Length: 235
Image (cartoon, rainbow, N blue to C red; front, top):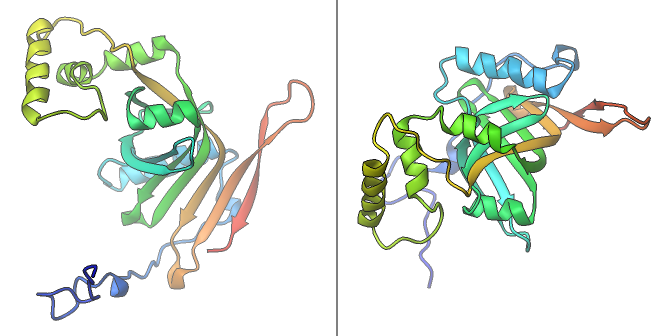
């Protein structure tokens, strides 16, 4: 018989660890269509600045969700490293699980979970590799130890022990001491998520949250740029 875990775990007679009763009442200001910037990028920049000013730890942390060719999903937290009107950029080993899944299925979702300020941003779009020059510029801006670590780790592959990872790092740290240039790993680089939709979620009282979503509309005329329509979603 499988183990059954009651809502009140053993050793928790008051039910303090019961997730069914954990709830917070959001009492923040709402989000109206008239409040939005003219594009999702400008709206994201506005909210990102406010998340940073609020003291939120690592406001650039985002959950990246991918799926393999059979549709099986996987998620992990990574750090946003750039954004502009081309999209949202993060860096990874292209041979990692997410890198391989994106190579086979480029559709990706991003989630910025800014819970302390009762906000979320959800991005859905298609990932593409950034130019090698952009990858190199970012790679060499990283702390020296992080550069060596990226070279030492075949991300997501099975390894026998922690000692093997530490030994690989030590060998490369000796080869490329502080002050020398670490080569960009061949299978390491940036991915830009070009959004097809961007949803801004604002927590409201009684779970009647505001959800406004920008949806990309391609211009019909030749040479027309991208335009966006705004949809309100039920909470």
